[in-house]
Length: 219
Image 1 (cartoon, rainbow, N blue to C red):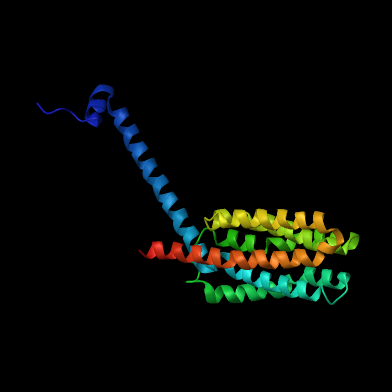
Image 2 (image 1 turned 135 degrees about the horizontal axis):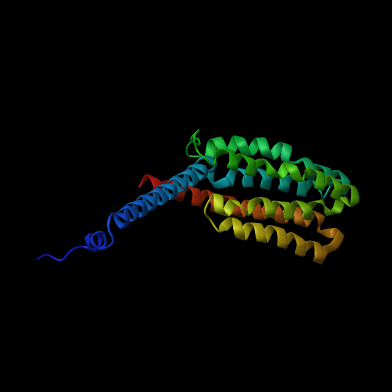
């Protein structure tokens, strides 16, 4: 006589309730797998459409570089104001670059569509704190911007599934803070240059990662 399978033995021993439990567990497992796959696809879609966030790093890195150069020729309070509002130039540039570097538009029904948009513009809410910092000490604006940038970009490590953003966020925030401690009032221009460099180095890394995610999906 053939040996009964574990499923049959459990049904014979414990009755129909056990079979219902097995079916429920199997269904629940399939639902969890499907949800995981859906999240994976949604995240890949976000990275593909935004080029992994590289357009924002390129745009803000460029405006930080321009601001840093201006700081060697203009009074510090004026340059601090430029640094405060450089996002008004960087954001439209970033959105323009995103349309050209992204491999495809984000799906309208992507469940992460709103979240990714909110994350992209969340730094605007830090403007009141920056204005307070400027009113107290214009020279502190770059180090505050660097810290806010680190806070802003850290969650992108989850959104784009790369540790590059973790290293970038930590290096930007702590590196600027260290420069402030070491150079004091002379740190203003060098922090802006440091931020431009950090953004510029990170941009191609996250762009390459986003391209690799899209390539794996196609395969």
